[in-house]
Image 1 (cartoon, rainbow, N blue to C red):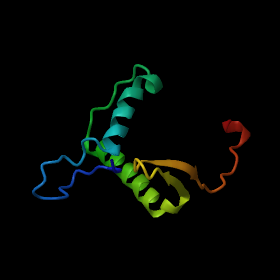
Image 2 (image 1 turned 90 degrees about the horizontal axis):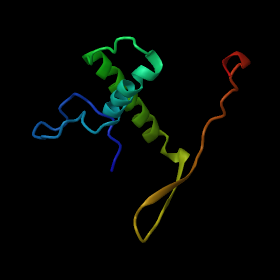
Image 3 (image 1 turned 180 degrees about the vertical axis):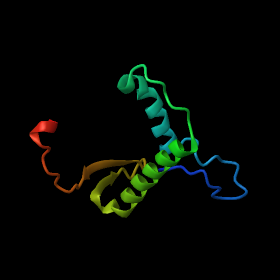
Image 4 (image 1 turned 90 degrees about the vertical axis):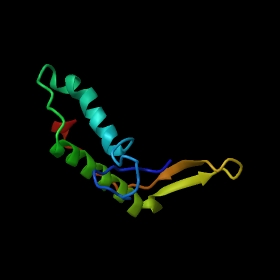
Length: 103
């Protein structure tokens, strides 16, 4: 399976596949909805909107692009018998520690 960021655009005019279904953006929207009560309590959940989907699509596309642009940060071992790969390491930039007030 490949990464599918998601879009509302028609990628291939003759395609019947929905470009939002089973995408990272749709998964983000589902996670947002499932976590709403845990974080926001009894506050009214916002109705799905174009702006909300645009936010999820934009974040997902940014993540996929960043992963693609920085693929050399991943060390993947592929089993020649099965063709399946396992991520063995991820190279990251050092991150500064959080201020004590945020920990």
